[in-house]
Length: 395
Ligand code: 3PG
Ligand code: MG
Image 1 (cartoon, rainbow, N blue to C red):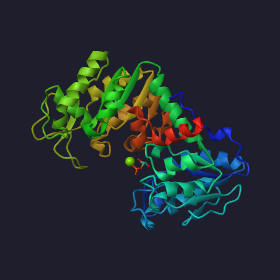
Image 2: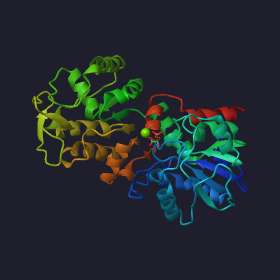
Image 3: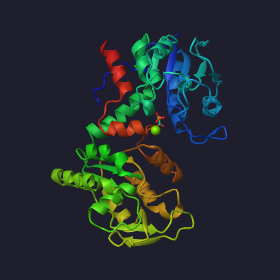
Image 4: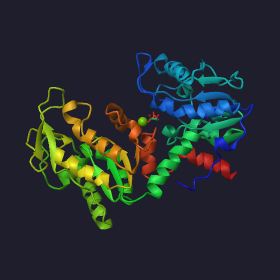
């Protein structure tokens, strides 16, 4: 929202100050190595700005969902510290025990070990938040990807730190999403894919109040195909939500928004690299077949809508893009978004993975680091960590 009112890190004099910056460095790690560093790279400008401003920098983040109250080497931020240090070109000291105080000088970067090792983090425990707050002069909330969680390191601490502000990444995310949602250049096209309509009912419902076109994909599209009365074969869809899906269609009609249905689909009998795909009209899926992607005619239709868009918001693939036979629909969609002159925003783990796979990430106007937070923002929900900053700014 353009009316978000909080103090920004850029507005503060950082020289000689101890900063505790909450980032979302929750990245995939395999065999002790970071396998996708988008979130780490997104945090770099904030860290550099703090260092350039003369601050002593403490970073904190969660990684995974470890059991609270104990150390677990599998969820250690060690691989992140190493990776960050390489990107930053400077040492990043990992501090395992940090709640009682951290030795850090201006120009230095210390990464505090996984916040979720601390008992009380998830429940936003006040005593824990106070201990975190006592570590710094300024708390900087920069973790957009975790802004939908009211936890000690994202929310509680903002109430008790001497000074609490929004970091540049968090502010940029809110600006970009706010612009797309609240003052979009028309037509606004939203693309919502993914496997289950149940996880995205709320976001579909809210988006329908704003969009001109709503392109649905994956298992979500299947629900709409079923709502049109077509046979589903063995496709993934949620019969319990047939009525809810019909209600969305009615809502769209009422507003004059469109939910274009796939006209052709790619089907197979199994989801595997050995699968033998076939393309069919959406109305002619066989009894033992599953819809696993949209067909070429549908891709052309979608690309036409995307070419005319003024603003595009994208979350979720339209097919099982991880398997080559079912990747074409998502690839063509990504290419259309990349080629479009529209202001485009993409968010969510699968969407970002697809864009990375097709080498198109840098042709999207804004790549969000948020998954759940991105969806909750689109749902129109208040993000608790942002609300805490706003409350502080009101005094
Ligand atoms: C995410 O990856 O969705 C965020 O880092 C939040 O993680 P969480 O869902 O474990 O709170
Ligand atoms: Mg999540």
